[in-house]
Length: 402
Ligand SMILES: Nc1nc2c(c(=O)[nH]1)N[C@H]1C(S)=C(S)[C@@H](COP(=O)(O)OP(=O)(O)OC[C@H]3O[C@@H](n4cnc5c(N)ncnc54)[C@H](O)[C@@H]3O)O[C@H]1N2
Ligand code: MOO
Image 1: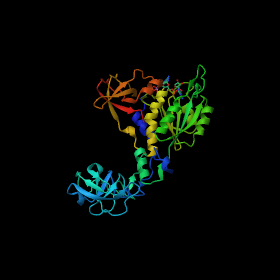
Image 2: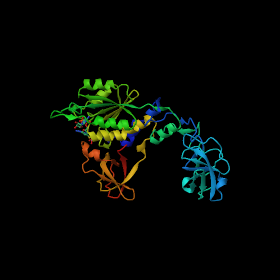
Image 3: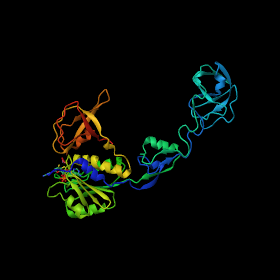
Image 4: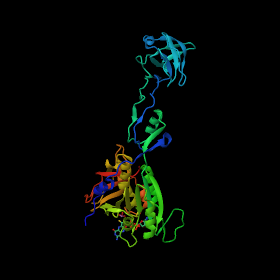
């Protein structure tokens, strides 16, 4: 039986997903949110012609012939301008960011001036009139769209929204992702595990991934490998946008997750795909909810989350899918020919003097190895049946750091 290709699975997983509705947040809470509505400037920036230098505001005509000795008549500081008009033969001491007084059309940097108590002697011509003045509105004008709907509010966008004197913004609601670990062997971090128990680590990785991709995580805890335990926790996630389960996806006697999800109303779309790691991935829908049943091996679960969950969240936020733009790197070591499943090979990167990314596959690709996975910074994406590749060849990669 040939397995579903990853590209086809990805199309099915994001099919029909639309940006969520909007909510209003204060500027202080807008960081990393996605704009649902454009931001319009509430004022003009700069609000006046502003000096770009510490120096002297003069009339250009007065400094045509040098040296020129001008009468120092006052000062314009940021926050406290010079109220009068600069007349012929006059200069006003001015500081960076201060309003250029009426009458002046040029700022001469102080390095070019010998100043006495009452005079400013301009000795060096720097440039034509108008120099070192930032005109009113040079950055943006009141009423102008400064940020488009769909923009991600990173540091630069936060600064601009603040500069535009915005106090609240309409942003996309965060997709809520419920995360359910499954397995009788699991105990939460902080417990002293019995000899046959292990710590449930995957939900912590998934939670971090969800948060950094702009979602909200709802940690449901650990379900035992019984239909009752699974059912009750799956039912608790009824209102979330996405339900993610971890483990119990394979073919073992205790791998009940797929069955119980269906009993709880999930319509199965696919189970098992041509992917390595991650073959036993389950996907289905439950009303408006999307359900991802991730394999339990920690690396498999996280690789599936990078490949499928991130694009789902991007769709729900109205963001472009960053991973759709394939990045490439240069192989620092050889790779064997690939088998029938798309292989996501954990790798570490170095950059050479030319700025090229050189990627070294890790020695062991076992999907249980969390320590090695934490050292990897990208996945080399190998198409099914790709031929052996030599050092120096260009390969597709999926960066792991968000
Ligand atoms: N006969 C076959 N056996 C297996 C197959 C197969 O096709 N035929 N597939 C293998 C592959 S590939 C994977 S991946 C695993 C996935 O199995 P499950 O999804 O059923 O996962 P579990 O058996 O529940 O767990 C696997 C492994 O991961 C550990 N685990 C589970 N949950 C967590 C957690 N929350 N935190 C940390 N570690 C977790 C679990 O203890 C197991 O060690 O199946 C293969 N077998
Ligand atoms: O495909 Mo499993 O997900 O290799 O470990």
